[in-house]
Amino acid sequence: MTSLRFIQGQSFHFFIPFVFRNLLINPMKNSRRLFLKQAGLSSLGLAALPILSRCRANNNNNKNPFVFARATPESQGVDSQKLIDFVKAADSSGLEWHSFRILRHGNIIAEGFWEPFKSDYKHTLYSLSKSFTSTAIGFAVKEGLISVEDQVISFFPNELPEVIDYKLKSLKIKHLLTMNTGHDSGTMGLMRENEGNKTWVQSFLEQPLKHEPGTHFFYNTGATYMLGAIVHAKTSQNLEEYLKPRFFDKLEISDYDWEQSPEGLNTAGYGLRVKNEDIAKLGQFYLQNGTWGNEELLSAEWVEEASSKHTESQEGDGDWSQGYGYQFWRCKPAPGFYRGDGAYGQYCVIIPQYDMVIAVNSESFDMGKSMQIMWDHILPAIKNDPLPENRESNKILNALCSNLNIDTPKGLKSSSLAIEINSREYKIDDNSFGIESLTFDIAHDQGEMKILTEEGENILRFGMENWLTNEAFVKNDFPIENRIHVPSLIAATATWLNENTLSITRKFVEAVHSDTLICLFEGNKLKLSFNNSVAANSNTEDPRETLFGIA
Image 1 (cartoon, rainbow, N blue to C red):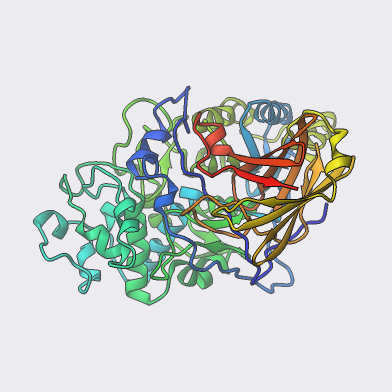
Image 2: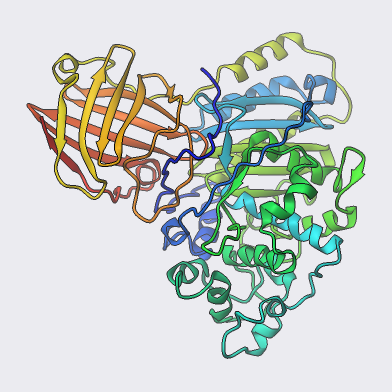
């Protein structure tokens, strides 16, 4: 399958689903879900976030881009059989893993991508973006532009509320970094609601602080946005512009993009997309105490400060209960472990004791279980010294990692109805999507759906019980209202649920989620309903209207 990249100027609309409930269930049953609710993303849904105003690709022209060296696990003191166990456990977990890389001593010892995801596709990071924003603050501190002790209100003299109480006056950058702002509810909802009347900064500063800053931990994505706004206030650059020469170019991270607020500032707490290898680069950069290529970019003192526990976090004994640093979480297995993470299982795990980095992308609805799989299988594999080579085990590991795939829905691979409906144009009743007609063409191994709108025709191609990645950006003609729109290639597969019901699953392979189109054919009539992956895994209904058509 041909690997494809973002084509500048092409448009594609992708929804970020509404529901976050049941994101994290046993074994850490109240862990990450609580923080999503606190951030204002659970009850409001990501509909509370802005429509993408601009999506920028940044490309280096380096002739010899940095790549990690590959090494056998045993040469780096890791038991390859236990890595086999890890991959098998991840693959059979019932959670959807998209990619992983494991580094030790700066070498990749295992990596895998579940088809249809590819190594050169970027991936939505959700809150793992926060760790990149923290890195930008580190650079601004290094350059003397700011101090973590600076008052937040000092950067926004023209966006302050009429009344500034003592709590707001005492709010400092370090409180934004450590999620100790004093809020006890999410701030993003009001920031979104006030669009057009007030800037996001104004809306954040107007929201009352129930606690004195520094005394109450509350996971709050709006606080991270303010960090990016402070960088902009000091440099007139948004985060990706500021980080480009200092970090992205230095680590040879390219082809990234970051969503923006209506004011043109990067959303900071979410919305960054990079490749899995770039997540590994972030981890290795911190593992090397801020150095890259023998150049100190950030000081070891800053890395220590950013990764240390500054506050208690969630109650309990889970992986979200070990304390919080500067937009990094501490991890349960040992005091030195820390990580950046994002919703649905985007991880950058940094393990200084073992000189190891783990980078993961996924659509996991139990992030605690995902991490436990890593702890249970990877950590016991690590030894202090190199091990005797195990060629047979390495051969098995490599074969296993090379043949990972996300299972396609299985029903009937063919239907006698296909011949009857092929090339038949179904005129669609008036609908909010502006769909005028749908036409199907289905063969034994693949098919396509032609979607006619007033803007023209789009074609979605799909495999029959196999993934087929569309070779160009196909507009998502069935978005969920008020969702973020980012470009992504679509891989699609279809199966017949019965003789007259065709189910088409679209997976957004440069994002996270998937979407199922259920096409019921009865005589000359068509009924099209929807079920996105978050709704399907959260026992909720997809909010989109059902479409009806007649041939």
